[in-house]
Length: 200
Length: 250
Image (cartoon, rainbow over all chains, first blue to last red):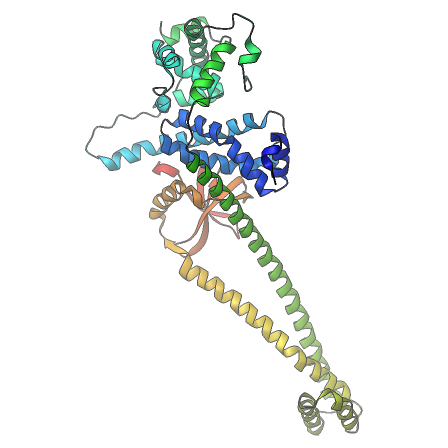
């Protein structure tokens, strides 16, 4: 069957009906975005590969529940972020125990609100974007990336950053403003052409 | 300016600049390179896992059906035996416990089992001569004899199942103490390939089966609660939560 000739919605419909070939094609098509989300959230390729596979499994298991209220890509993006959030929470829980077993003589000062979002970094992105992100306070930049790129909820950003939702919003506001100054902005009314994906 | 001051002055997220957002997404997501072989491995691993889960569901369904069917046959066999015994007692009472009649019946049954189909009617005629009640008893005994292999087969099937269950408990299921549980759970959670979604179970909205273990002599399933992200050792036959384990050793 020539799945490459079918559009995404038709492939998804067939996958929902149990067609393994269609499911394979759907998963292959979504892998890049899923991996990229995991890579940005977890900060290293190895963990990103593990969690991407986990996210694909969740997508495959849950594809029959996809109702088409958003695009399939957006739905997969959310599955990927949820999967990585789960992993970050697990890592956070494991952190004190792991450190203790590695060196039980060291002084431990790990609080419950340890910021586990430090994995989000952009050292490998292209120069202009990296320069802009590096030019503003990192907590502002991270807040904008988590919200506008990774599309995390305020509550999740607040939880992961160990700050209040109000602080999250103010960081996002300040970060957006600073990045707009550095990277140009919506000055020409040419937004629709440049924007892709769903804005939450 | 500190966060707190900003929070006090402007507790909102502002407006996203669509062009900036598009550039960020492009750089941070679209530009991330993917290793094609890793992608192919990941997708095929997922498909294999789904196939495994489907086959496990099929086995569970088949096992369930077989159990129902075996029970039905056992009930039928038990009913047949009960009728045969009852009829035999009734006949013995009716004939006054005449040993000669019983002997004739046994003899006739043996003859019937040895004779071919063509001689069966002749044997019936011969035994008719012994007494009026004999053919009925003979039919019952013959029926009981022909049913015997089926009963044996069912018993053997049950014994096989029981033996398999015992073997499963004895050889496959690991005996473990409560103290060892957290470490086992952490290892299993790290090896997510072993997880099997089992949906709603014993009050858990979405469970993932990790492993079966023998906890202090009791067979329990270690189930990950996806919603609360906790892990429970549950006796699935009673839904009793035998132990609660916090992943990460907290």
